[in-house]
Amino acid sequence: MYVTAGVTGRVGGATARALLGRGAEVRVLVRRAADAEEWRARGAEAHIVDLADRDALTAALRGCAGFFVLLPFDPSVENLDGNTDALLASIVGAVTDQHVPHVVALSSGGADLPTGTGPIAGLHRLELALQSTDALITSLRPGHFQEKVADVIDTARAFGVFPVLAPSADAPVSMVAAADVGVIAARSLLNPPMVSETVDIVGPSYSERDVAVLLGAALSRALHVEVIAEPRWLTTLMDAGLPPHAARSLVELHHADAQGLLAPRGDRRLHTSTEIASTIEQLLLG
Image (tube, rainbow, N blue to C red; front, side):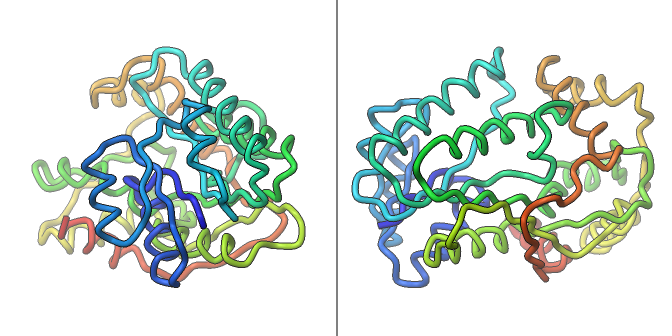
């Protein structure tokens, strides 16, 4: 039995679907009854669990051969560090209580750094916390997700603008598709490595201007690439609806990215091939 968290999100859902497609027994963790029914219809066992509830999570991990876990970033939580502490205590406690043999954690490039990376600093803490257990740990560290383009589709469609929070729109960076990461996570669960490892996941490279051209083509309109000056990053994120503390955390993340701090530095690298044009097409189809 393989237990998968985060299945209402892109990577967790892709992981569970990949496992089911390979005939594995899958138990998904969800927070709503409606989501549980949807996954049961797909052939999975479903438990309604809050990751911060150690007792419920411990029960859901009973008998599992491998556990896919992630650390949700909830901008509505006032105390981001406190929320991370609660999640880590629950996850590590449940993994320890049930003697889970293998954990695959969704981490990120830059998670080797303890500070200065915004929400990724929480993933650094996740990796360290899991290493304190007896489980074999596989930490997957993708860079940019191709699906981040979803954040600007409405603006691009309505106003013909493609906003960029970076010093330049012309620097190419690796962008991975969530489905590819899910396939890698499922493969790792089914075929655990001999030792714990961190795995960088590297996708095709695109600049933000490249993405704007491809999105514009898909929307049948030319897009104006607006490189937002660094002093405006915080207000731009707050104007988008983020509370100040969450916006500041994401500004720190953008700074880290601009400084090259999110570069691959894991034990080994895996390369993916899904092109972002395909991802954009899927996002526009809904």
